[in-house]
Image (tube, rainbow, N blue to C red; front, side, top):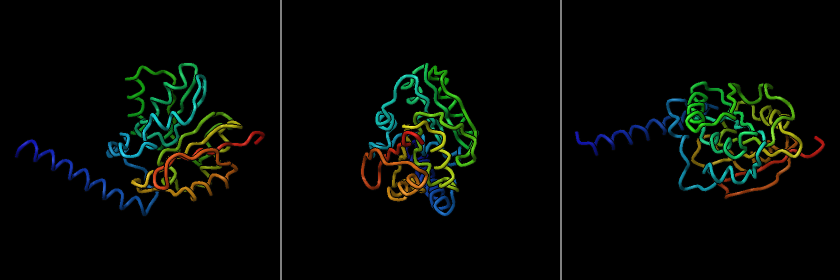
Length: 213
């Protein structure tokens, strides 16, 4: 078998496995398994709003900020977030899968970053501290959460007044959430919409926790 044929077979196998995962996960709130982390480890070159650098840019981070990377997966955003808040800032990389956290930890160590904490928990479990974070990022994770209302309520509570939640959604994700669905969940938890980037099927929505809440 030639190298090109072997490569083609590998690509086809990955596509078939990815397709099977998508079909199954559409019916249930299943996070991407660790062994398929390659599907979520890279930027989508066809959607600017999915690219880590652009997502981080929209957050207007400052040195010293505290950021929650909720459902961090293999850490695609963890490293650029940690660099943006600087050594005086802090990033909490949160995921329900220890394998994903291990991969995110490898990346931060390779980048020489010491301002990241790793936290194994699910959103909506009430384990996040109140009024702690300046920013929260939720990148193609919302649809994987079984109790979305509880998760949004917890994210509202854990943000500081004036803090921002960024929800990133992409139509290629099997758990894609429409803008209207994300907005209904967020406003139901007390957030107000602050900014929108992208288009209908690939977007970033910023929600703000009002002052005095």
